[in-house]
Length: 120
Image (tube, rainbow, N blue to C red):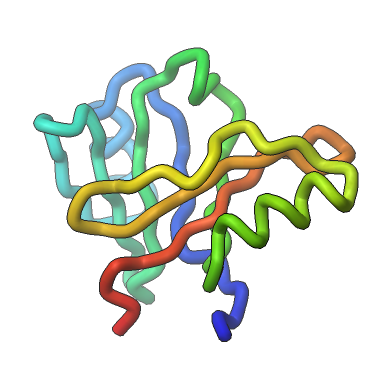
């Protein structure tokens, strides 16, 4: 059973390279640009991390997306609906990494679930 830890945090950015530079200089985060995915990964000193997706309708500025560890995204998304939330994206594969799903809680907060292909 997962510990339900926060496993990834996405901060939308209008300029991915600029965001990487800003947070690297501000917090000392390690930055890895992934141009093939139009995405920039970040990692803090304690090995927590996340990424910068480009600002879009799906990732609007000001909406930081927190990913929670899940053993079964499909079951968790069914429970979201039973508990009064709304599923925004069904389970989707991130090639070579894992799967994610996105939901809105009853208050309107948007969060995500993540299952790694390599849980170790």
